[in-house]
Image: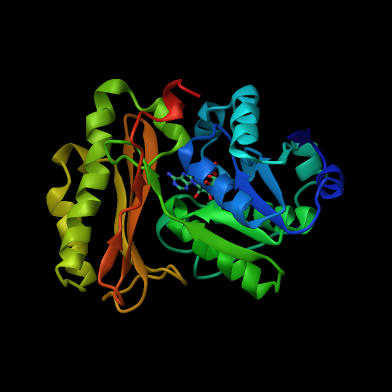
Length: 296
Ligand code: AMP
């Protein structure tokens, strides 16, 4: 695997179909599942690693974001990436930011409402990665369900010739959705963090029993949420998978999502709901402790 810092170098190393996995680093098995999928379907796999300051609405969150280029280089290489694209800030933003990419509607609710400016930062960096790296296919996690909707919409609206794919959430053994931020959850708050996925799974059970009303599904999450989590809860919502707008009933592929701060760490999670099959996608679980905790 080659590590490069410019778009030109990454393009020069690309042959055939190019699979891109955009990340902010501190890789875990969720990222690795995307790299492995890219490897299966693409001739060249590029993993980008850039902690994009424009998508952080809290400077303390940006400062605390975990980083380790040595660790990420080893993990991306062993997962089969061919190129690690690790640009510095001047490569990504050589000028003051003049061009903006905003995706109306899709970006407005949930994360957009609670993290002002977040999706403008995401949309701009993804547009740059697509333009500069020219991937055939780009792989994203459904963990960031609204982000996936924003990126699919911008790709289609700008006629970018990139296939955008969303892959299932990878969870820790106990059900907590993997996130690089999990390493910052204080040990004594871990049990509380686990309550988020547990509450979502209760709603998933109701959905699989035939419930289609968003209000009832949201109620199932709230009823199963530990009272200690309520103060830190930003939202619980059911949204349409493609447009990320709030729906009253699940008639098309949708997701039930929440965001909450636990032990000073903001976490998001969701479950996709497919009314055609009647199944809820709870993602996949690791069978051993995550590499986040030192085995990598
Ligand atoms: P991040 O480094 O957190 O910006 O994430 C980079 C990519 O990995 C995004 O497409 C995320 O949705 C995806 N991702 C993050 N966590 C998970 C997870 N637990 N399961 C699957 N994909 C994930």
